[in-house]
Image 1: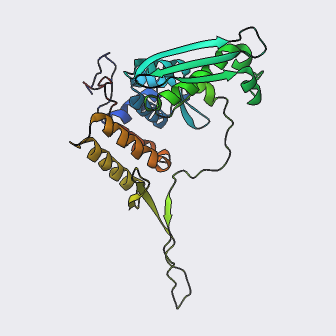
Image 2: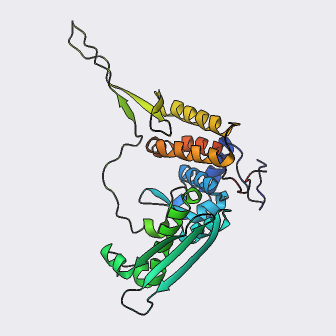
Image 3: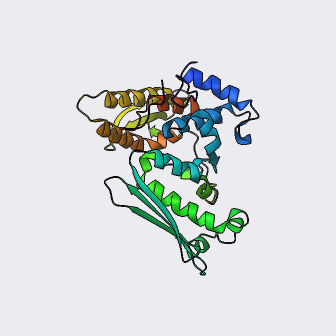
Length: 292
């Protein structure tokens, strides 16, 4: 293990190192309680951190799973966006302070694009059932208005930087969906049952396949296992990133489109498979290389 980034933070070089590091960190009392004795959660959090540009220990301090969904603290989201070469400016204000309906405003400006303005008022909080809610909404109401406006603006202006993560402040206020979910979303292909004419017993059951989609929504191929699907997905990423005809920006766009087309399957993968995919994901053009 000798992979260090520029700020001297240790970064695993491969999945084996990542798994060993996750096991060690999960046994430490220095990591947040939600990660103690949960090596797989540590692994997923550090892999999410890698996608965002956070070193492992930064990821564990700033990423949390709220209601089953990974999320990042609002201050960390701000830091990630401000560190992006695409960020021109972020401005936050509170309009109507001292009135019955103050409004938090966040203006996010991406280089070369129109500013994104998000607003969240006391009336918005009341409609969402948040105003007066026990906890931070009662203790720090202005701060919570600010965090909600910030989360909306940053996600809309910099989705590539935040990789779809919501802020922890927002995730904590999101009602829990109690609808049962399949642990591994699958595309099902029906195979007619085989009936034994002598015994009348039914033979084969419908077979399950994992469909790999192209960015245009068409099925590229299907696989019998999630492991095989993962290898196919990784191979497609490598074909895109090794292309000599695409610019770095076009490659990132293609990979992002591929990710969106296959998000249902990806969200249901086992942590180890998610980690394998993360290790081959390209870095955003202009970002610092986190391996050295």
